[in-house]
Length: 254
Image (cartoon, rainbow, N blue to C red; front, side, top):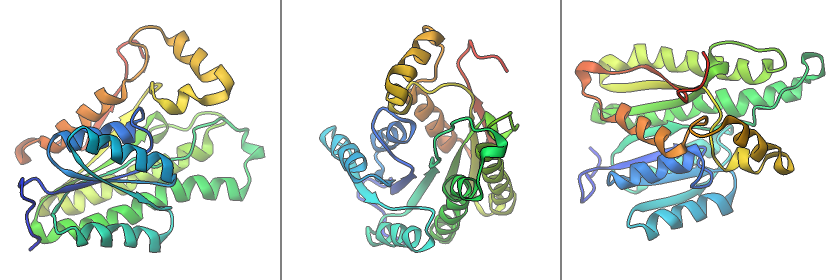
């Protein structure tokens, strides 16, 4: 049995944690506010280290880990480091994905498709494996996988991204059906709309900013509001678990 943290809250890991103004960073901050020691995992050292420092400066507990989570050995190393911390893993959030940029189908190369799949789908399989191994001995825990409208349908010029997201959704469904009866809550959250985070703000030398402006007030998803929804999923009692939740601005058509 893992040693319980002094605050009794255990720890959390967020795969695909970037800046504080993105979904992954906002989720890290929200989980830290709840008293969990957060492991922020991302590919860019500067971003995850800055995020972890920001959380610590705000009174939370956070550790930055740099890893390419599409590589099995690196994912195993991440969870080994978490286990060495001695706190039970209460929640794993998988938020990794490549940029969702349109590309004509006939211009998609095998390498392009494989990269989208490895980052957005295969990495979720790897993270799910390791998280389940950590949670099952305690008979509890939450796994949340970040989805998109592409998880549900493939649009023209988005075949690569949609195929990765649809595969991730299928993994989440299968894990939920197998491990829900064992006390592990597995959820898939569809984010349907433009997220007002750093990724879009920095896109295309002003193109992203113009797109945000075009959506108008409350026309985009606030990363902190998304993070709060993730926390509410984790906090649900066993008698009323959500598997799939979709989030969108009230102005968004669907």
